[in-house]
Amino acid sequence: MRALVVTGPGEASVQEVPDPVPAAGQLLVDVERVGICGTDVELYTGKMAYIDQGHTHFPIRLGHEWTGRVSAVGDTADEWWIGRRITGDTMLGCGHCEYCAAAHHHVCPHRFEVGIRDGWPGALAEQVLIPSRFAYEIPDHVSVTAAALVEPGGNSLRAARAASIQPGQKVLVLGSGTIGLLAAQFAIAEGAEVHVGGVRERSLALARSLGAPHTWQLADLADADSDQFDAVIEATSVESMPALSVRLAKPAGRVVYIGLSSTPSLVDSRDIALKDITAVGILSASPGLAGAIESFASGSVVPDPIVSEVVTLEDVPARFEGRRGENAGPGPKVHVDPRLGA
Ligand SMILES: [Zn+2]
Ligand SMILES: [Zn+2]
Image (cartoon, rainbow, N blue to C red; front, side, top):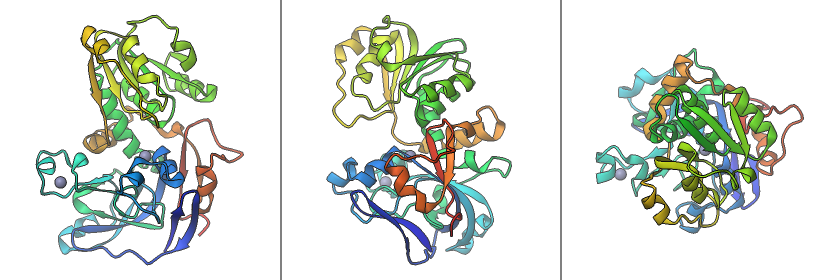
């Protein structure tokens, strides 16, 4: 089959690789759509922390935001899955440790991460393998675009839930990338008055069209009044934003950290304590996947406008380099259909 292979920092190409064969407990999926995200770009450039930490080595097979149909199973017990439309968790816990036993498999120290960590091949390929215990069925009426947004959707849903939103509350989402815009949509669905801070005017216009009544340039927020928002969801990669989030939150409010900068983003814990702020960190979509599928299936959140274009596997290296197609829309997310250009 064809797969995108990152052979070293800044080097990627589509290659013919051995067809994957499902082992017992695994599903073989014909991939229909895959998103590429900031984590993929960091792995491509070699800057992702897991590479330094020894969790990830070149060559890397990327792709962790995907949907497709099950075409084969490794075990008769899983035959029910054949022909089903699914997505899968990225975080494949060992199933035996204290974290897995407590349903916290996304922080299992022995975990694989599909397309990211310890060599589990990702979905930027014609086919991908996923253990059936990490598969999620997606109803047929959900668009293929939305189905491939379940993974970032699960992250964003968790961020919105961590903000403990009451209808009518003012929520600031910092960042107008995929996670920021999806978190804004989930917060709007919970009845919040959502403000979005970002840089690209096209993304901020998209945020307004998705139902956020107010948008800000990040630079202007540095001078904004303190104590304005019931909750702040920080989804940027800008190192000054985590501390700004605490300043802009109201006393007794909440700050949710899901963005990661490439350098330390320092917060003075006195500011958190003296305002009685609840600060929450979010890693991974795992506990949010089922909820994201539900929200997309019910139509309470329609994430499709986030996607700007659908490209081939061959187009992916150029997208990692930041180039966009001539007809790309305003959304931050690029999708890949591995069946195109075959
Ligand atoms: Zn991602
Ligand atoms: Zn475990």
